[in-house]
Length: 476
Image 1 (spheres, one colour):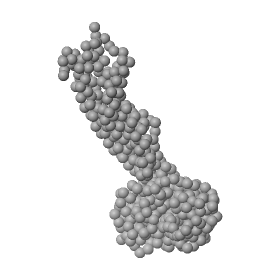
Image 2 (cartoon, one colour):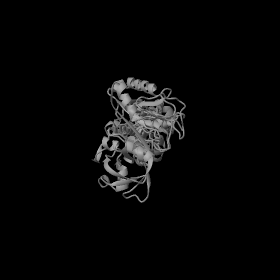
Image 3 (cartoon, helix red, strand yellow):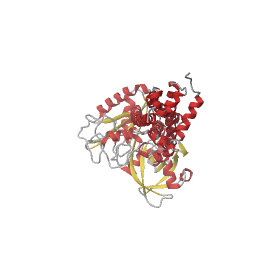
Image 4 (spheres, one colour):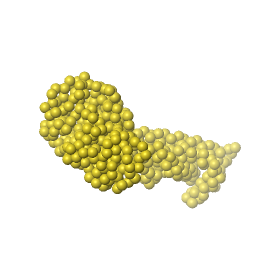
């Protein structure tokens, strides 16, 4: 009478078969190893990307709208995306304005002059909104009753434009203006003059950008009005020049040969787009910077804060209308924080799904490998299967045995893959890729591995269970 094997006996048979073919098990599971490691790293990189986006925009006011001007030039989508990934502070060019102007300096908060699209330092030498040195615009401006400056065919936004926007655009709670440039710094522990980003900002810039102080105070309106030579250092700058924030406080640095008193040091902000952050910048009063650092030829960005994040689109349209009335025929780059965050998140999600798709393909390849080996195993073990059936094993027992072998092979591969992912993580991080390993990612990777091996082992197992005992015993 045909009976059924106990599950412990099936486990014992599986263990014996696998232990006697260790090398074959390892080779069979290589596809699962790679797939498991890949999917765990993909999930970790995806989580890291989300965390990076959240960190990059943690200081970005959700209602912030940035306005900047650029002359002729092509719009650079790569530059835009680079800026959108982490610009908590200023004006990234948007599709609203496809022209750009650069002054050869490095942009920062709201600075379109260099690589700081929108306010957080971006790639040095990049140009917000596709700006290039020497660009110009042929647009003609009509007289601006509020004092907007223009130089020939160049438009330079001013504090008067901030006042005009506050007056004529409803739903704005605050406005500020900022620009940036590269300047030579000396002092402290520096052995020679070093180039740093110098940003000219107003006193309300820190509040709008949610900047915190480690020590001292941010710049004041009085210092701006009197053009005092004072500055606030980013944390990294303070450490590089003085060794610490506390040593920097009330010290002096020389910017382009002129002494500035350090009135405060910002709290550490962390890495943002392109590996640069407010930590690496020096802030000076807006008018001071114009007088002593950049001269009047600047490319500033005006930032306005919408009172209601749900009315940002309406405020942007009103801003565009007001500027069009003041600067006839001129196109400004206008972008909002929400668009930047959505673009960055969408880009991260797309990349994550692309990598997940690649991982699935690797798993399929690994599963096919397991299936092929198990088919070969069925052929090699035909006599063994015939003996098992002759002594009373049911089709179900044979099916379970081969399925368990497939599951064990894939589980072993998945475990090795998880360990491989843990070992490779430090190497991935060397390329400035943020990796956030999670227990759920490891468990999901193991699950994918086991399910893949089991599914692809189903057909060979079914084939083994359907063998006729007499035919199997006579198989050579």
